[in-house]
Amino acid sequence: MFEDVQPGPKDPMFDLKKLADNDTSPQKIDLGVGVYRNEDGGYHELQVVEKAKKILDETNPGHDYELTTGNPSFLNNAAALLFEENSKTLKDRKIASVQTISGTGACHLAALFLRRCKAFAKSVVYVGTPAWGNYEPLLELVGFEVDRYTYYDPHTHAANFKNLLDTVVNAPQNSIFVLQGCCHNPTGADLSQEQWKTLAEAMKKADAFPLFDIAYQGLGASPDNDAYGIQLFAEKGFEMVVCQSFSKNFGLYGERCGVLHVVTAEKTICRNVHDQLRSLIRWEFSSSPAYGSRLVNIILEDPDLRNEWLKELSAMRNRLVDNRKKLYRSLVDMHKTPGSWGALLTTTGLFCYLPLMKEQIVKLREKYHIYLPENGRINVAGLNPTNLGSVASAINEVLRDASKL
Image (cartoon, rainbow, N blue to C red):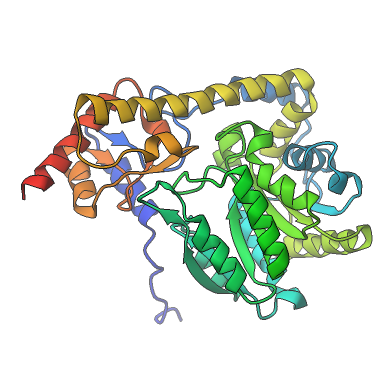
């Protein structure tokens, strides 16, 4: 029956994780998978999450299903975190919010919902490259045509904003643009507030539709600053979809906790959209996991716990900045390593592109047991006081070896 089934396409991150997991060398350094690591290179559990777990255990809500669309209190708190509590869009009840299976599930549900809307029947979805590897397949899975444009300029270590604007101006009406709210994956190159303003004006004129993905809110700057583009577009009256994840900023990776927000033009439309999302969720997975959303809700609705979370988030963010500076100083000041390393100082969040060739990355893996994707993206949270010197030294050596050839 299944003789004609072919293997799925290669997943570079899946293969990289397998290689790293199977390496038993004590020298192994994993800078690949996008998870915030602690100073020991392991999983980092927020102290405030530990407290929330104890509170949840004491209240013991059981293991019954939540509503198909998710717990209303959690959804309200999630929307307030993203759009601001006093947002007019929020107060006017124009946002249909539903819980999803983390950010990936939110992106899939958004794509599925949009594909079923008449307004987007012939729309092309524009994805800036390089991009998170799941965008294209999940969009194509529901039947969208995907077009690419170059998002990152390796020479300036910044977004190629001119190219983004040119793409918007020349795109057909009702084109969809995937936009990352902050901490761009995989480059770490974000738009400035002025660029967000310019982009909003251009997309208004072009009748372009924003599909926002925000998976790292609070790890680039404050949560409000990281959500600036989303809040601006909401203030400008855009209809849009926003995919929100709590994996990184709460450390709830395996709990698969996310939300899809659809910003509509008016209340009546919002109710219809919410009910349509309810149907899609019911048909696909019935309801989302409750554990992670309950923990997030406990923290967000308690002022003391919320402040504690913000402090921990700030400490995580500062450590990422510190790791970038230390690696930069080690490469540039200590080793005088050839190449341009400014991206370490100008990008934000977990990720940064290093100017390394595929052959050099393979050598880092095979000779030095240092694991990173072959596109040069590193997870700076994987650096710590015990391995940073080794990473800088190994990068320096593979680059100098290459220059001798």
